[in-house]
Amino acid sequence: MQRRRLRNPLALAVLATLWQKPMHPYEIAQTLRSQGKDSSTKINYGSLYTVVQNLEKHGFVEVTDVERQGNRPERTVYGITETGRQEATEWMSDLIAVPAKEFPIFETALSLLGVLPPSDVERLLEERLKALDVQVASGRGALEKLYETLPRLFLVENEYQLHMTEAEAAWVRGF
Image (cartoon, rainbow, N blue to C red; front, side):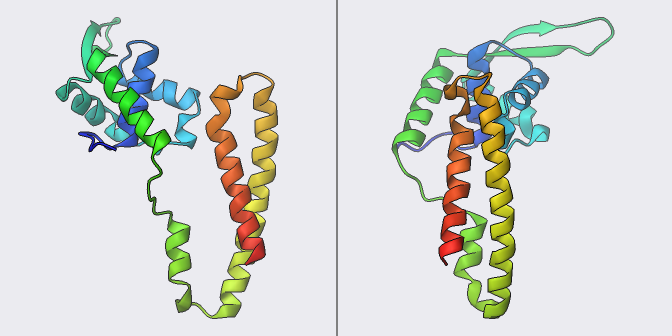
C-alpha cells in the first residue's frame, strides 16, 4: 500500500461524490447526506471546504464553474480531475485489498478492562448487549426496507455494519 498524500476518508468521499458530477461544496455535503454516506464515513461538514481546497491544491479536483443565483453569494463548482480519478481508484483499491489495523474505542476499553470490578464489567456488558441487539434488529429492518428500492451495491456498507454489530453481539454474549 503506497503512502497517500491525503488520508482523510472525507477526501475520498468527496472524490467519489464528484465522480458523479461537478458540484459546489454545499451540494457535496447534501449528496453525501442524502446517499447515507454519513453513516459510514465521519463527515465533519465544517471542514468540508478545507478538504475540497486541499484536493484542489493536490490537483485532484478543479474549479469547473462559478455560479451566481440572484442575491446569493457565488458558489464555486468543483469537478474531479483525471489525477483525482486515478488517486480515488488507487486509494479505494488499497482500502479494499489491504487489511489495516484500526483502533476502535471498544477494543481500547477491553484492553483496559482491569480498572473496573468484575461485577461492573458484567453489568456493563449486559447493557451493551441489549443495545447491540436493538441495533441489530433495527438494522435488519432498515436493510430489508432499503432492499425494496435500492440495488445491493448501494447497501454494502449497511450490510457490513449489520454483520459487524452481529459479530460484536455474538462475542459479547460468549464472553
